[in-house]
Image (cartoon, rainbow, N blue to C red; front, side, top):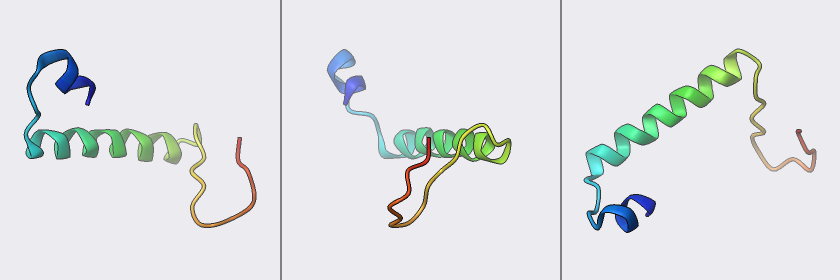
Length: 48
């Protein structure tokens, strides 16, 4: 949405999917290194 507001152009789906995969890969890498913790599921516990 920020891209659309700043450029007036709607990004194409393949570009969006590529950007999403880059984000997911960075998150997975950080998780593998122990730099972040991803909480999965419906737990009442809070991870900080």
